[in-house]
Image (cartoon, rainbow over all chains, first blue to last red; front, side, top):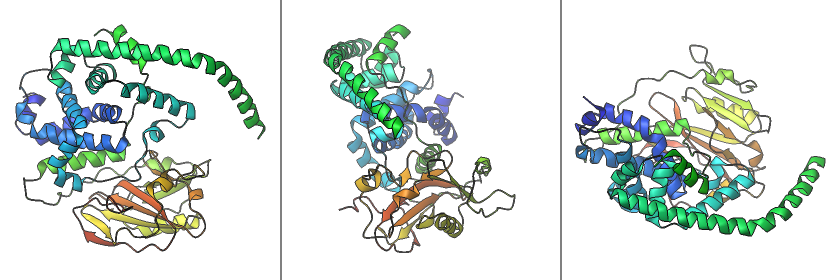
Length: 202
Length: 216
């Protein structure tokens, strides 16, 4: 019996295998959508609780469950409060880890990397939510148009047009940023040379 | 979508680092999800004991282990504390049974610390254990840029910075412990004043640290 069929029939071991396989992509996707470590942990747990609840909707035939799971994760991230209410009792039992690191703390240590990350967050934040979701699924999580359409429950043409709108906006932003930093770059480079020499002498 | 197209789009938002959960944390969340889906609806129950995982021998690989380890039967230390080049300490716990030797080791290494192990289904009482804990902001972003708990933790250990504990302060370390006596999570903070001893009580709540909203 396929993993799909086993999960649909309530096989917890098969579901555990799905968790093993999809934990990383779901956490990354959740983190990129929410920009928040703790929220991403909640999304991860809630996604799998939701997947278990909705398991009977799985078609026994079909390929990878990746689009289905990432689709659930996208919905949970979008309606985190609603999902948290549904699983209020479970979430109270969820092991917490404190202190929760901030967005920029845990994946980058260098100031310039943190700045770059902040710029990415800002550009991503300038997209509409629907464009963000399609961008995250297709570009960062590697789904193709048809899989993203399946994940979001929309037509393939809709995925294409959202992605193309996202691309136009981001390209426009990139051009503007380049124009603005063309200046500062020259000055900034000079400053940083002076600073690093000073640091060496310390 | 072809590869070139995806690369062009990715280049517009180059999110290079992949956010990843530390292994311990991933295991804990998996156990949480699996115990929830196995829980009969509406009837809370305790998790069944899990078969012991292989005790990690990784702690033995730490070059400069300074902590005095308490040996398990097989010669694997129950825990190890090593000092890193930058002055931080890495704590590795192989068997979380008795917190006192670890606490004594940390004190011997100059960290005024209180250590507790919290088994599944328990938490410390009272919580919060101090009325003068640093706020989350102060704990995570101290003025000198050296937080006590360095996150994400080293695999498979936890890294702390003794320099964050100033004279008169006490570091509080709570570790959640799975049924097989392995640690899973850590909560740490620094108290400016006295810290109440941890009395373990039954709990369905989050095992570590004060409840949400304790900062008021």
